[in-house]
Length: 114
Length: 118
Image (tube, rainbow over all chains, first blue to last red; front, side, top):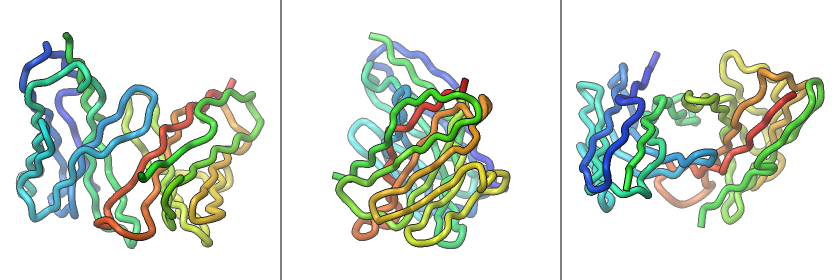
């Protein structure tokens, strides 16, 4: 059974710092991995999606890497801003018929202080 | 584009009553919608997969008679929590998979519905 773990559970940093969020998964046979952002009491926004054949994806100040063999992904946020404060969720996608279900980590709650 | 709405955003109901939550894809059609629930400080738990024109597929441990799902059209799925109890209080989130276009991996999420059962 696939399990997704995110470390740390919470992180508080001053504005401007570069930071790394970690995600690990127990079964390396994934289809792809996705990072999401969730603002308090709101839905989710997809940040980056990495296919199992890819090593990394970049979008603006965000860079996500994937090491499928070791079951790890990292989300790197450069020059953090207060607006980056949110919960970051990692999810892996495995085939389940046509559902392509996502299996979720518990998230990392990030606070960027001005 | 790709906006998913949920209604209501918050609802408080008394124990024993039923509550209906709507999930709508506003600018695209979706044959598949997912329903999740999220407890405080916990991750999303997939409850069921809703398919337009057919019965929903429920995850193990989710009572299909308690959580009724109806995917009435390509833009609307509803989740009805029947005979609600305080332990059903949670944050319910839906997501929709576009019928056409994209990579096939997109899921667009609604803003969630906060259900409180008193």
